[in-house]
Length: 66
View 1 (cartoon, rainbow, N blue to C red):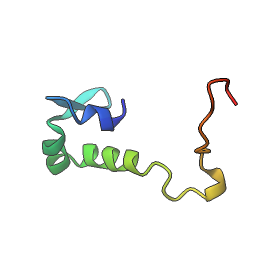
View 2 (cartoon, one colour):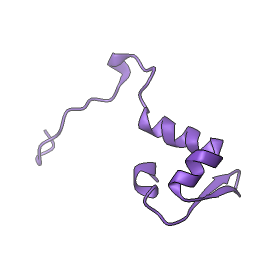
View 3 (cartoon, one colour):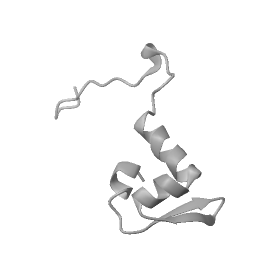
């Protein structure tokens, strides 16, 4: 799930290898869970370090797929 949506949840469970690694609110997990913070910041900058030509196109398609 995208963390931009998940951060609004009352309670978030962070799983690592099928086990609960941490739980709390978005703010709590950013402060206390290195794993959650790493995942969250990675999703904020998913294309950092990628060459410009390797980045997905940001072109918006019309309703006809063009």
